[in-house]
Length: 382
Image (tube, rainbow, N blue to C red; front, side, top):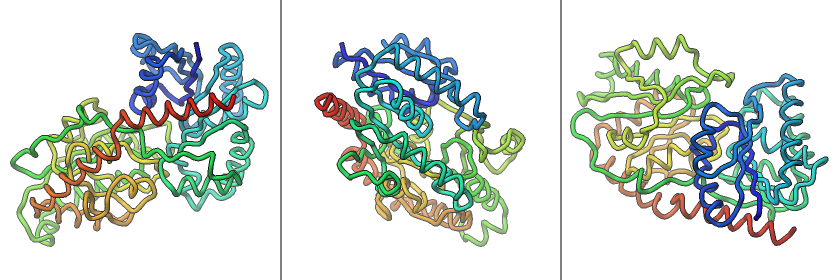
C-alpha cells in the first residue's frame, strides 16, 4: 500500500482546506497520514481513517530551538513512515519538509502554495524576504516535485526566486467548494446583510470593514450616501493571536458590545450565514493564495466585494460576480456596499453569475481529482 503523508501547520486548517483530498486518497488505496499541530481534532480525523501525528508547528514562532525541535520531530516521523509521497501545505511545512529531504529520503514532494504570506506582500520586510528566498531555494530543490499555485502572481514570484522551469508548476484555483453544502437559496427579505468572514487580521481588511460599518451607523454618513435602505454589517471569525497582525481580544470584545456591527465569532455554519445574507465582503491585502471564503460566497450565489489583491481578483470575475476596490480604503468599501444595497437587481445578477462561475471552476470534486492526478504523475517518476 502506498503511504501518503500530508504535512500541514495545524489540524483545523487541514480540516477546512484539504480533508476531501485525504478522504479520496484513502478510497483510492493510499495509507494516509497527517503531520500537524493537534488542537483537538485528531480523534475526529482518526475516525475517517487518517493516522494523525502531532508535530509542534508554530505558525508565527521564530524561536530557533522550537523550530529545530519541530524539524527534528518531522524528520524522525518521515524516516519511520517512509512515505512514497509527501504533500505539504502552507509555508512552514513546505520549507521544513524540503530541508528535511536533504537528510531523509522522500521519493516525491508536492508543495502547495496557499499564499506567500506577509513577507512577500510587505515592502517593509525586504531583509527578511531575502533570507526567506534563500530558504525557499534550499528547500524546494527536490528533483521529483510539483509546486501547486493558486494564483499566477504567486507562481511568477516564486518561480523567479527558485529559478525553476515552469513545468514543475501546477495551477489549481483554491481548495474547492462543496457545491451541495454551499448552494443557492433565495436571499432573505428585509435589511441588506453584508458579511465579512475571515480570520480577524489587519491584512484581511477587518479594520476597513469595521470602519465602514461605523461610518454607516453615523446619521451624517447615511445622509451622504443618500438613501434610507437599512444595511446590517455582520463579522464572522475570531482573533488569530499567533499572527502578529491579529486584532486584539480587547478590540474584538468592544466590537461585540457595539451597536453598529454584529460580531458572531468563529462559526462552523458559514454556508447558512452566507445564504442568509445579500453581500459578502473581503477587503484583503494579505498574501492570499485564493481565499476560500470568496468561492464559497460565489457558490451560494451572493454578490461579492473584494480588492484587486492577488488571489482575491482570481476568485471573482470583476464587475460580473464582484465589485473591485483598492485595498485599505474603507470609504471605497462603504461606497461599494451602498451601491449594491441600493440595487437589488445588480446584486441578484452578480449572484447568479457567481454561482455559474463556482459550478464551472471551483467544484471540490474536480479539485480533488487534480491532486490525485498529480500524485500519480510523481509516482511514475520514482
